Length: 160
Image 1 (cartoon, one colour):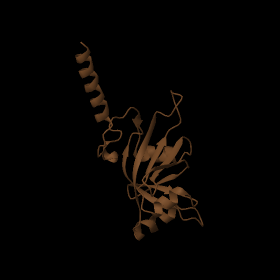
Image 2 (spheres, one colour):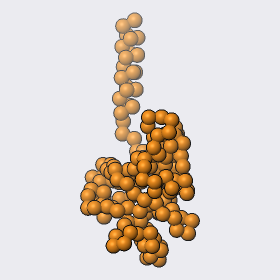
Image 3 (cartoon, one colour):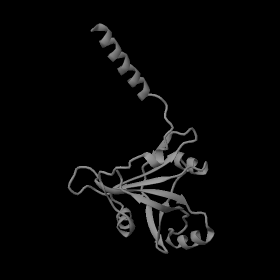
Image 4 (tube, helix red, strand yellow):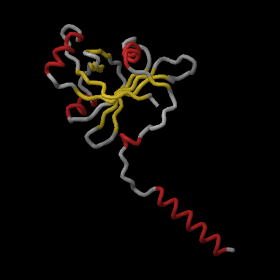
């Protein structure tokens, strides 16, 4: 009986160790593939973001590969049926990450309706706008004397 118990205990220990083995995972495509909250997109998302209520965040990656999340309010604009996030940033870790080529993801959560927490919102995959013609068109949305960064919304998924 003791030998059987020792064998079972050894097998459980081996399974436990295997669970901690390093696995090569693509975090972008594997993260949050099941959504528990309702999502919004398009004009509804743009209007909600521009209401300046709710929860805002921008995620980037630090030079050492660690995540960086920043809370600040941003705006959205629409040009030729494409949506853009308008970022006005003072120099900080997020701007350093942008200068180092980090991709960005924005998250917006609407003010709670029926729950004590945001349950409707969106995560937006972003791509920096560098095309001069597009930037010229977007400059019409910029406040006087201010040049924000513009990111095209590539994809929108529910916030979680």
